[in-house]
Image (tube, rainbow, N blue to C red; front, side, top):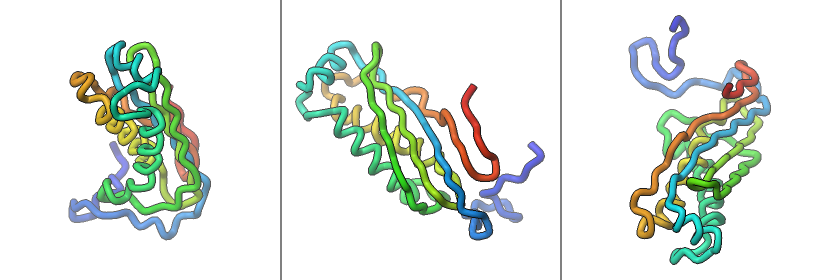
Length: 157
């Protein structure tokens, strides 16, 4: 790697990058992940009969809240003005699939907000069903696509 890491200063210490000289541009990021669950628990989620209530709606709200709280959770993440957060949650064969897209008009990227939205939604699902499925697992949380800023568009192959 020939490029210098932006979050490391000349003394080798972590620091927050100065983005004040960058232009504001529209930026989006989409992240995804999945919560693996038993067929029995998936049936309860679909029928809306889990003891803690509506798992999907609660996880969606939690994901949106998570995106908004990202700078308070990730130490070097800039506070940004989020324009929109969309959290899509669907029951699939082996679990619950989560896709979050976050959009801003700002000076820095929004990947961490999308990843945090997915992670918090997934953790909320586990919290709501952990008594029913103690083996529930979060897998494959990752950025799928991003656009805007100096690096332009990127999509996972």
